[in-house]
Figure 1 (cartoon, rainbow, N blue to C red):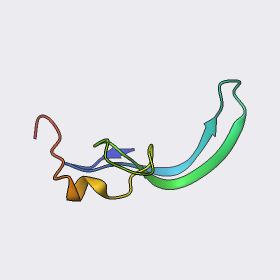
Figure 2 (cartoon, rainbow, N blue to C red):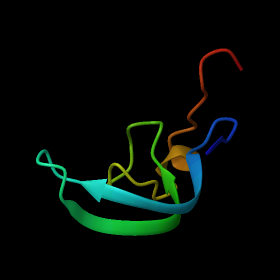
Figure 3 (cartoon, rainbow, N blue to C red):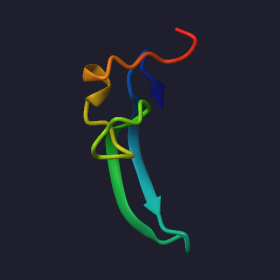
Length: 59
């Protein structure tokens, strides 16, 4: 994983998404997670941080 400055969290490799019982419901590879809260496709990034002028704390 890589936290992009004022952007998303980039995930490289395959990740299993599991339900509360531990069953794999989906496997995704190479994707970005929303960090700004503005994505219409949470938890995934849709680039909304750009229009929202998102700035991470500490930058």
